[in-house]
Length: 320
Image (cartoon, rainbow, N blue to C red; front, side, top):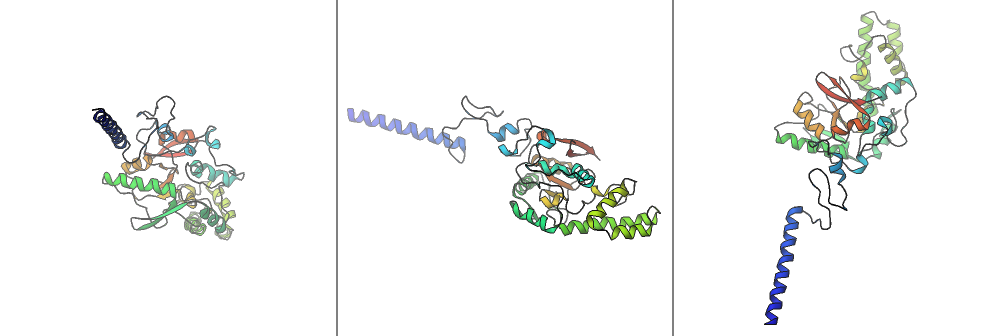
């Protein structure tokens, strides 16, 4: 009889252990989490536990899909306080202007932004691009190259968009990564016809136009931006600054592989999906251009960015 009782007790214990393990496995879905504190939907934890950084960082933005890690948490000190370690702030007028216009990417989280505003030549761009983790995907029949974290977020956004019968595709073949020479070509595609236009309007002499065309690129950028201070603009249509149309060579966000020109930029639903995955518009009047910033929208002001509304769209720019 004692043997039977012992067997019954052992059987009961084994059943209890088995059922407990089965219930925990179902709760964790794919992996066991023994001895882990259980977090509530608001991100709180049981006594003695720690808050998951992902949950903590997105408490103020329940719609965000950004999975923040500790290194993605904004720092104190506003925009300057969130710049990369060792960042070389520009001291020249052109560099300062570009920094103000394009600077949002420098505070991106979970990626490797450049530590300076201007790459001087192709070799500097190539060296930087070779130093960061990047991924290549074919999206909409176009090869897209982005830093890996930015690519992963983009792919997640594309999947979410599909669930809403939406598409997210690059606008053209050079919508993501760009070489230094590509930015030279893009720059000249605005400057050369702009000079012709303003000569025709009598605002620039033929001699000055010829002189400006023959300048080294860095000097030409200075001359063009000085002309724009007089209302002589070089963007397409000649009604706004060239910086809203193309970047001076060596300063493009596309060098960083943190930017993508999106074909569906005019669809507010697409913009909302991209924002939930850390992609935001950062250059007013360059509406197709999105920048990966790696945080929820509710955290952007903590990075030292401010929202500017243009043509019914939200742009996040340096608050400097």
